[in-house]
Image (cartoon, rainbow, N blue to C red; front, side):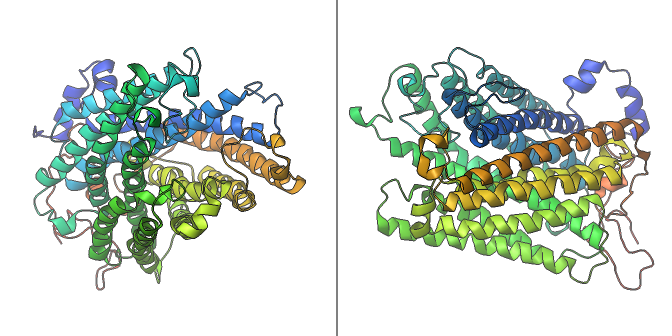
Length: 565
């Protein structure tokens, strides 16, 4: 790890680099973080457009969808499958973990870059290739894979069933490469935090979002191995005719379900933990309060990561699982709500009595807590085997999932972007546009998914292309709810244009700000905005924890970690 003399000297050297080496093949952690962020934003637009198309098909079946055309049943399956895959694997993970992890970790622990900068660059390049492959899979003969993002065999294992001889293997290859990229990134994050912290940055002085990213990386590394093995067997089934998952040849399709969900449910917490860390950073700054129960939050994060390995089979209550095992997994599933609830209550306790400023990042942080609570409470119905058997694979599951993942993948991202935007670009985003975007997103979001709780409870199955084929599920009341949800989705998409305009306009024309516009304590705010290559003019020393706000007998209501007194 190099040690720059001064930021000015390093910036001067950096200016001699070509555009390719500086912005495309850079090893600078900040550039790589922004590459992940921009790639994730582009993929979010694609994934969102897919949701618009299949929601239009559900609300107005067998009619031409504006900007797309007529949706066939096979295209519908491909759109649903790739919407889920893209939003989880190419939006939530790259933005929350790789994007902000890369940008923030060296700045927040006080070092000049990741310990393995070339490995870091390789990680992004592999991820980018995976994104290209998933895009190619959509246009090959037969179209994109349509076997759902869970890829259950035998549907996913044979082109005879899924009718996508190219799309299915390419989808699997893209996911596998994406996992390789995040394995490399997770190793880099963990080693950097363990070995490159600034003097004085003890374990209990590390900002909680850094801890969350490290714990999430460890959970990912521990959970993904079995799925990689299962994916290799699935790829062999697809391409060379092995029958690991074919029951007619002695295989077992349930084996895939076990391997997938052993990874798939911890995956929820892989993206949840960085999101809660982001929220924790923001609420302390905008409440001017010390983070309540730092050690408890850290302990609950570790407990969440551990318990997440014991809940996977609640996805299989309708797969013929032994009822005694179903009861066991009901208990473990409900147990994991305890550390998560503790964490959220700690956030509420942090807000209590605070001097709260409702700036745009704080609005997003508060919305995260409110919306995620709805997702958590409705998850109890699906974690309990008795109610899950009725609600399984209905739109109730879709609504619950989005009340969980939308706060994680979208709301936390908007919170983080609006909060760290001044550090990224040296300018502030427009507050009026920011609040317009906030309300234009939150209100339609609830109008989309509250109706889906009702359609799901009424029995609408989530994998049906047209409910006109099932008159009992196509009553006027249910159809009106589907139209309401779809129109709300369109309104929400329109307001995303406000965010894009605000983001790109503010990059060039936003109000210029100093190094620490929010008067925050953590080390990234001691670096210039935007930070030069090497980050700090003089490497910082840490004297205290990151959340010393409103300290009695101190004139200022904040106390940066690098200030001696």
